[in-house]
Image (cartoon, rainbow, N blue to C red; front, side, top):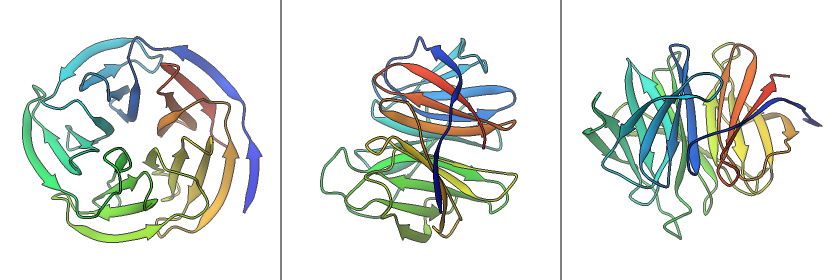
Length: 217
């Protein structure tokens, strides 16, 4: 395992309060806010083009499957499928325990290759869950190399997962079974979400309300 630093290509101020999760679909970014429960559809440069209101406030991760938006609610430990209007379509309880209401589900991504979701639990325990489209756990593994986990994305080119840690201020490339390959320090305060597109890594900062773009190593 090697550890390096990577430099920022672009740093963009977002008109989004407390961005917490990010994904890519159809040449746009989708970013959740755990402040107001909105999902923001933006350009790749972070310009908001649509706001999707949901029935929740504590939104952390976001993913898209079959053109439908899915989010996770941390406090209630639920995977939520949204209608196109933003209203709740289906809710799936994710099994597991958390010591505090704010130490639960933090990041979400969908793997078309494996036809499943990957969800991170922030801390106590710090782990990655592999679940079906209806939230049933298929597999899980603990993470001992990061102080916490705040985001996750699936790399379609390699089949690996990428994690981001708020407290450690690092990103990690791992196998889908949890083997650590590489870690990188990032100059981002409170990084909360991560996604890869076109050999670039997009990371949102909760406290700075910013989008950081890195060249994928």
